Image: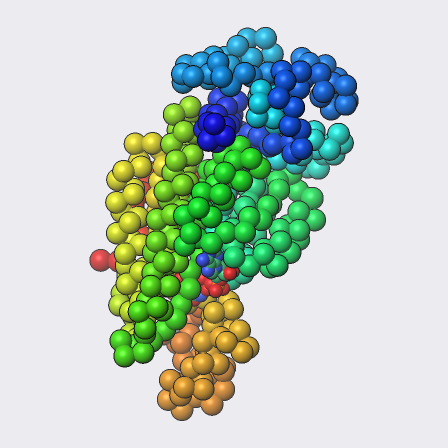
Length: 392
Ligand SMILES: NC(=O)c1ccc[n+]([C@@H]2O[C@H](COP(=O)([O-])OP(=O)(O)OC[C@H]3O[C@@H](n4cnc5c(N)ncnc54)[C@H](O)[C@@H]3O)[C@@H](O)[C@H]2O)c1
């Protein structure tokens, strides 16, 4: 029965969203089962009168049309959004034009800062897997600073929680949350989506970014390593699309104003083979096949699916980590002839890029915003390689 809630909330969110996407947020620890939830809200001074509360008995909403009627009837009697939605047997949810107001309704306090509706991602709910460090963390920050509510989904709780609290300390109008997630485990990804619905009411953008790299030639890579990388880099993307598209499809059933996006962070190794790195390149090539095929299947639901193929992120931990980074490894392995320092190894790789530098977070963020803001392109693999890879 709880599964019904994960469809009902995204449907309501779309019906109450005009041009501005609204946020719906579960109020934890209210577990009344009676219809007098509204009395609880008034008695506890969450709201002045029941006039701000939309009461729903989910058992009477069996058909799509019944759900549409809920919003229709509300707006016949009110010119504003409800502040709270009570759903019998499921609990209480705050609803507001931005997440911080939804939370402040819950906390019985209100504070306003200069909310800028011009923020490019305002109101969007964006999940970023592997968002605790590297490209993912940078993308999470870029989306957050553009007004999105961000869910960082990562195995690394310590770094993920710290990042989320850094973002939230900026006290913008949007909110970041962390959900511990293993993208290679379908139940973990299903939980991620369900938690996101309870935090924000739905999912607008799924960025499938989590990925690992273990380089090696055919004589070095074991079946275990091959399967581990494939499970995270390839199957993980499938898991993300499988569960994110479910909620996006419900949303698209209830609005024709908004598009939803799935973005896979692929690689230049998804466009061209990579010497002694076939496990990584194979998974990334496969990812583009998934992107093209998902794009065909999901466009009728206003869900765009695109891959972004960055070049090497030399300043990120994968390359620059002082102990485990690729620069240290390549220096030790003598991979760059004549190089005696990390700077020389780095320079060797930078020289191969027409733009003369590595890929940076801002480059990938610009591509992601483009993929989201345009409404007429899906199934693409967008290179962001400073000219190193060109499409033909
Ligand atoms: N770094 C580069 O040069 C580069 C270049 C092109 C593409 N990419 C791609 O960008 C993406 C991010 O790469 P990065 O270099 O920023 O990585 P990174 O190693 O810096 O960070 C990866 C993050 O993913 C998390 N993670 C690992 N396995 C996970 C799992 N099973 N479930 C959830 N989270 C998991 C890690 O905890 C970490 O926080 C990857 O898909 C990678 O293939 C990276």
